[in-house]
Image 1 (tube, rainbow, N blue to C red):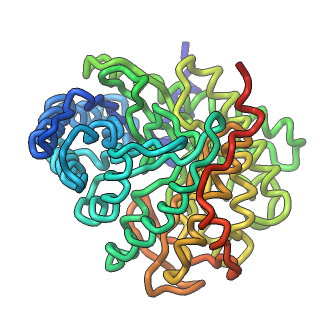
Image 2: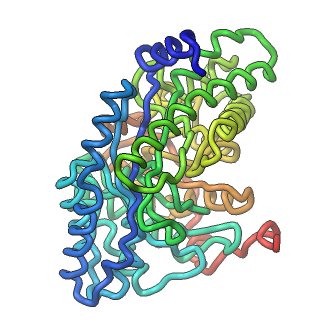
Length: 452
């Protein structure tokens, strides 16, 4: 039974501490849309998305009004299009992305994810055709997000795919240069991608998922930062305990919304992803949480330890609140989407190398990072390879979302707007890894893969 204080505290979190449901995401299988004729396949994709998602946005808005809980985004994730389009006799998979985009606009969602390929152990014909179509797909659509999984703990890292993705990112940046490289903000390269992630740009509906499912992503960096005022100067185990209790309350709210959306849409409830997802708004920053623990600026020595404590406490609190925690679930560190990260990167304290170290202990990876427009494809591939190696060896999901800002140099700001925020262009190492990347092949799976 909730007490009056619990209710008033939750209202205060929503009104003053940026607590919200970041997304209700409808996962949808498109496997039955496969067709040798690409035009028919695209039409089937459009029709099925519109048919199954027509009530998603109005239902989310009704729940938002009735419960008084902000639901920032309504999104759709679909079966990796490399699988759906593999049977079609076409070289250009952009036709499928354009069908997804039209459907997303028709039903009114914010984003649709799943223009994706899973190539961690090799590439099929469909995978190759999808990857080569990514630059056109992301430059000719508004709401479509793309992802490619290039490695896993079980399979190792597909370095052929890593090499190719460096060039794909360059090409996508060039095609969307007039938008600050916006296409790259909708493209994620994964290691150990998960099938039930509700967050963009990496969401797709895995083949192990049901026909359709509702996954919810919660967020609450502002709530955690506010709570830490109660334990100023206290030992870190007390800090961890407070974060656990706060994450518990945030997750319970997410489960309530997820179950209500599931009931009203008559779609199975999947998971609550309890990730702390920041926004550019003041007071909604993961970086500021770390600084509240005692760091002068996020990125200085001690940042990785503070982030490890935060990530672990969030997970512990979340799993006590729900038996259906999934997705990525932890603390996100996207530079452009976090006001404190932007400030730390702008002053030079937060560097690319430090961010890489931080990804060893938190959710996802090098996220929404702008780099100079003249960064070579080989260097982009090398950054992807480093991050994939962290995920592979540590049996965790890692990802890279890099934006080569065409015409920009270190220190410039790149504006994306909305939740994507703005990013200071960060320096990369000038020395080349071209020979390493050119070798191709596959980095073998580590010993951790032999667990059966």
